[in-house]
Length: 316
Image (cartoon, rainbow, N blue to C red; front, side, top):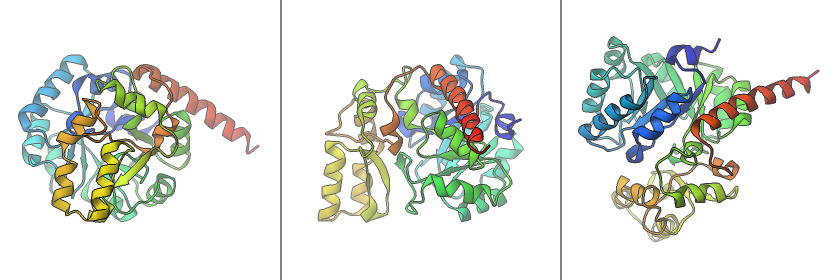
């Protein structure tokens, strides 16, 4: 028995990462229907827009799904959490901030809480605050990232070694081998974002998907180091323009404006890599096809089982 799938009432120990303002009901529902936990990323969207996506997702699936709230990013944290309770969403993912003040109220209303951590210290604090699940995210991950820059490979065993709640590994996972590796390191499951971009159901621009499929092993880069706003993106004209601005000197406020969700949508929805950015994790180098979400999850589970069996034979 997997305690993660038991807590979340899902078939497979695979969670979709929040995708900010490009989140949508179609992909969220597809992940949940395929046996994982689909997730709506609230981003900076106003409550009415998030509620519309929640209602549309409910019309597409009766399976559990979650909402991600980036606490230091969303200007509507209390309103979004109220919506989650109102619509009886079974799980919430809290990231980019201190989850402690919000967990008791969510638990009172039967909501399971996933908190994102990038260090042992953060994981321990999250567990003490009452988190049901910890999503441990390594430096390989897409989008807004931790300035600690700890890789998934070393982060997962350190966190699983000190907490008692289930740990979900995030960053650098895109296939069954990655799932098997994280289970071997003590995680109870995985969270993926970039891999779900390159699926048939994902309603993103074909150019965005194609760039991920064609990406080499060094096709992503980090922007924002100079202002303490680390973000991993695909190497595009716009991303390299951001790096040039950083070399010349840019303020945190200016950088925030240039990496707002408006520019995220230009890259992901319009497919314009010269005028907007495209989030992507390092796992893009492993992605070479465009399966349906169901094919992806089914194949991952089969491959993970095969890989774990083969690994066990190597020890005999």
